[in-house]
Length: 186
Length: 92
Image (cartoon, rainbow over all chains, first blue to last red; front, side, top):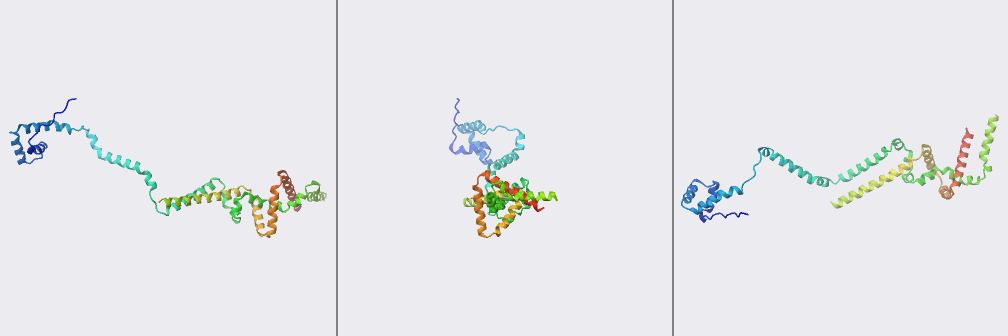
């Protein structure tokens, strides 16, 4: 690899002025003073030549098409906004909310769930017109209790029914047959 | 912040569980036919007016009924239904 030659040394008191002179940032008096020195000093001339040779290469940038610069600002802003949005969408969800919102949304959510499930089963009429309001919830929720109330009539005559285990002693039935026969005759 | 989220979570869970209980209750009730519903309602109203000893007797009978063998229960049930039908026919 070819090694780069170091800059030629210049007079210490002119080094800084020569750099400013190269960039054209000196006033007229200073410029004249530097030019006068350069006409007499070979090492400072060499230093300035080195600056002219090397500095353009260091600061050299890739030329971009003019169309790139036309939309440069707008595109950068759009990209930054998009990136910001992607980075923080979940933060918006977890952002602190007013205290009343949590139970309020919870209640509304559960109410929607319950109504949805009830209406979804297509049995709205039986839900609305229910005489069950006069029966406590603990009985309605317990299938055993419902069965108990459903078969309460049977339970009241369970003893009698058990005694009639023999079909021949089924007096009620035979009585009703007798009554029916009499009606037929009449 | 953490405490607030915990309280909100517990509250939400409570609402969900209570709605589940309500759903179970309405499901049991809805599975009954309209005549069965009427019967339950009438018997419940009658039950409320019964003296405590009658209530206890009925509870005992219910326990005994549940302990009976299935075929015997079915036989008794059939006999009960037949007698009821006959009684209805007789009253017409």
